[in-house]
Image 1 (spheres, rainbow, N blue to C red):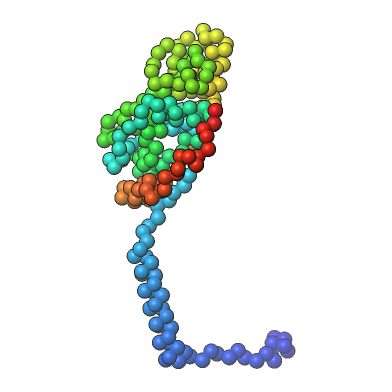
Image 2: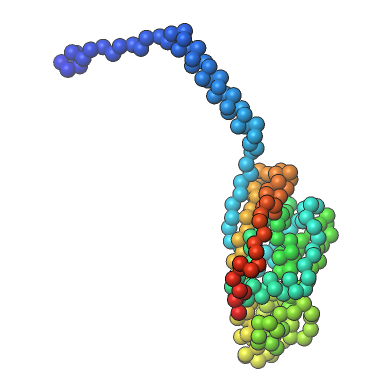
Length: 236
């Protein structure tokens, strides 16, 4: 032991709290618990939400369930064509929302039914397939306002067919110009990115049906419509 240590004064012990201090501390802790209880009564457990990017071809290769509270497929052929046209122009499709129901179950498509069914995704409501309009690319046309149609016919191909152009009957017999045309369109469209927000996590049931429905209502209500006159013109 050094001389400095020997000469150091002993630490003083804190005096015991007075009854008044104890009462004040107890009152503060009671207030803390009251505030915590009030906050917890208003809040609910938060399911995990995360957003990542899918490719278009990832989406139409998947199978989805449609919740009962969603309306059916209501798009017109014009709306379906307009969506694929946006892909040609490099425009985003908008955010898709799915709820991972847990191991062994397909994801529940909470928002984006019209878009994904139009793309060709397999969607089911109570086990019955949801049928929508199929958009075809007419390989004989070269103008954006003419190349898309909902009417099948010779030389017209779906996005799924374009994703594997080499499997189209007669592909190797096509002219080089036509083969290059549909192959380039396929690379541009089916590789487009789509933002997908996922509720919960695969393999873990972190969200109930009621919570997922509440999140859906949160995303689809309360907005103020935009005046169409204030929007910029659509790009050519």
